[in-house]
Amino acid sequence: MARLGPSPALSAVFFGRVATATLPHQTTKIARRLTAPVLTSVFKQPLMDSLDKKYYSIAEVSELTGLPHSTLRFWESEFPDVVKPRRNAGRTRFYTPRDIEGIRMLQYLLKERGLKLDAARAEMARNRSGVSRRFEAVERLRAIRSTLLELRDALADRQKKE
View 1 (cartoon, rainbow, N blue to C red):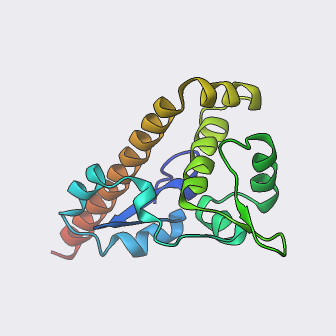
View 2 (cartoon, rainbow, N blue to C red):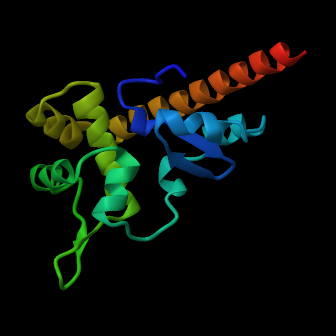
């Protein structure tokens, strides 16, 4: 399967109303279950709605984003206005869906666009809604591309069988 971009963990596969972050080797198995109405849901569903739990542990966020725990903790200290997980009495971090969206936006700015920390901080302070819109557009395009690639592969497999 072709790699979908610089950050494979951000590729999203949409199942009606639920989006899950997957790794490239998982998308082949999962995408076989996709149907045509999926394309309309890609345009309507913001990624934040796909997170169904109220709180996520650092391990779950790490798995969703493909980032190591140390990076999540570092970004928490560098971007306290974007990522501010709650803590319980034992000091365990609990991330909200809003925190996860902030992490994904930071990942987009720092890892994909290649901005330095200061530039990403300035961009988030200056135009957070613009960054959010661009990030969501890129995510939707990735999902559409993934769906189209899977449909193309399914058609090729079907033609080989005939």
